[in-house]
Every structure is written in C-alpha cells, then in structure tokens.
View 1 (tube, rainbow, N blue to C red):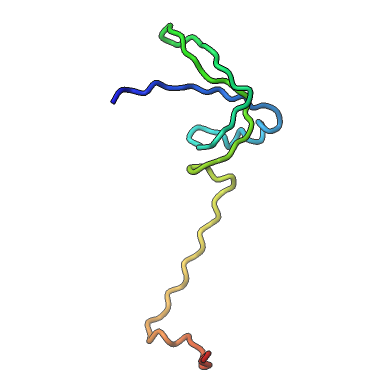
View 2: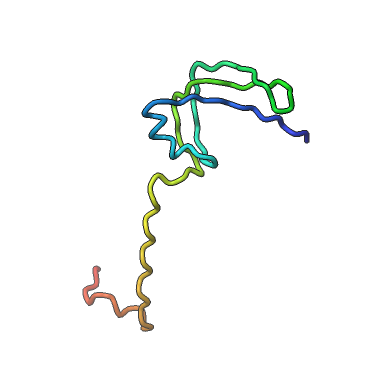
Length: 98
C-alpha cells in the first residue's frame, strides 16, 4: 500500500473556553471536534511546495477514548486483610435466612 498523505486541519478556539480547555487539549489526547465556517487555505510547505489545509472555528468538542484524566486518579483501595485459614464458615451468622 502507498503512503497516505497528511491532511492538516486548523481549528480556532479562543476566549475563556480556550483558556479552560488548554490544559486538556494536549498532544496525545483524543477528542472529537466539530468545525464551523469551514474553508480551505493554501500554505507554503518546508520543501518549497504548496499544501492545502482545512480551517474553521471550533464548535463542539467531545473527549473520546484515550483521554487524560481531568483530576488525579483516586488512590487505590487498600487490599483486604488476609483471613486466617479455617473452614470458610467462621464468619457466618447463626441465623439462617430460610
């Protein structure tokens, strides 16, 4: 199979919304982004050629799998204490429910 060319998409996001989301929209975070006012722009590539990219204003954003946690992960619960070896019925009540 041939190499698939990259398709660049520039999404503009600004204001208070951008400030609040900046720490979550980092490299490696997977998210769905809906662009509004979408149009195509050309740009000069490093090799001297010309490329094209989609440009738009960010509308909706939804984080998907692979997202980074917004808050620190909760501490793991401590493992229950080991029970001493016995018949396995030592912790049962004397009252049988039937």
